[in-house]
Amino acid sequence: MASRGRPPSRSGRAYLVGSVDHALTLLNALRDHPSLAVRESAELLGTAPSTAHRLLTTMQASGFVVQDPSTRRYSAGPALLAVALASLQRVDVARVARPHLSALAAETRETVSLAVPEGATVRFVDSVEGSEIVRVSSRTGVVVLAHASAAGKVLLAALTRDELLRLYPSSRLPRRTPRSITARSALMQELEEVRRTGFASSIEESALGLASVAAGVRDVRGRAIAALTLSVPAERLDPRRLELLATAVQRRARRIEGELGSGEDAGRD
Image (spheres, rainbow, N blue to C red):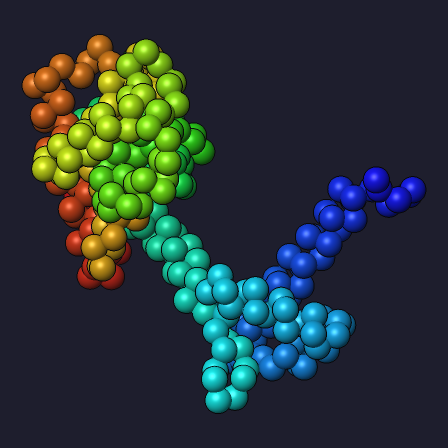
């Protein structure tokens, strides 16, 4: 039983928040110092060296710091660098892609968006509405299930089978509409087709009346970091138009990749 006046949930929560605060303090310190010793970390945190050592060991196990075997000092690890790089890439791809979103929206008269992966979901980080009277509204800020969206499918198609199984440990997938894919095996088959064609489509899988076509955007190392998506009312996406829009979105995605690789600013149509 919990002792009077000290509920386990409160003390546990305080401990967890304090540990996170200490970890963030050390990560911020590594921004200004190339490395830290255990004793320096303890002084910075106002804790015993043993406490600082346990925290650094935990951070090391997750790859956020690494220890030099000769000096025993800790410096920024690959996980921390990967987080920083991913943040920079998102800013860069959004900046480069923006003029292409506008150009593709003008070309197709449909709403064009840029989406980034967030585990088993995707988040739309930018969007330009089309000029059709009946059109899909801006998608900026919207989060959808990856397996139920064209943007999500092209990003999932870039993952290995092991990565997909970790992301979807269950053979059953959440349903958003009657047309959503609900079997992991069916998703795997569709992703093979996405890899073959280079684009993905979704017709009323995430929302009734909504259809989309997407192509992946890769960085200079070939990793899928975003998806360029055309969203249209489902009634306007017949097979012939699907093919035309798929060609247009793939062409524009390749141009974004070219500018990301060259470091040139976007803006030329």
